[in-house]
Length: 253
Image 1 (tube, rainbow, N blue to C red):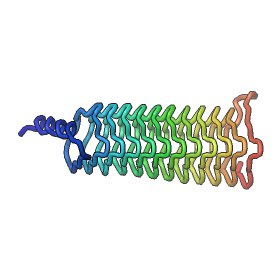
Image 2 (cartoon, rainbow, N blue to C red):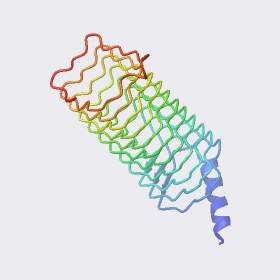
Image 3 (cartoon, one colour):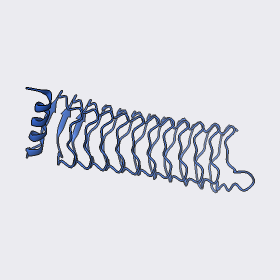
Image 4 (cartoon, helix red, strand yellow):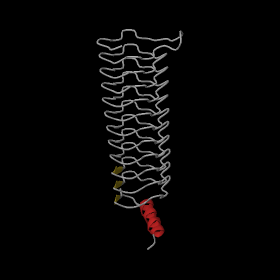
């Protein structure tokens, strides 16, 4: 049986399935499952490189150690999905719904996550190097030990998100909302936070060396023991900085 015939049979099997399907160690690169209802599907060690899953319903789906590099998941529903340790480098997840999804240890470097919903998602130890998250919603997301080096997080809503020991070095977060977010022991070197709202955010023991925070709203922030050497607060002489009720004990500048 040829590879193409086997792939067509796999598509037919998934399409006509009523109960959640378990698929283990299958090769389905380039498979077209756009718009399919695959909620609850369990995929382990499956190769889905460049697979087409646009607008697919993958609610509570389980992807364990799957290869999804370059996969097309634009507009897909992945709420409460398990994507632990999956390789999704360069995948297109723009406008996807990933609310409460588990992306622990996932590789999402250079992925497109613009305007996606990551509310309450678990991104612990995930790699999002140079990823595009512009306009994404990360409210209450857990991003401990996550690598956002060079990522685009501009216009995102990160209210209440947790970035414990994460790396946001050289990341772009202009015009973002990070009210009550936690950036404890975080690498924020060269980060761009201009025009962002960071009310009551916590930056304890973080490194803000050469960070750009001009026109940022820092009302009530906690910057205890922060490295603020060469931090860029003001844009020429017109810079506006709100540090009302801020905690600045033990800072380095």
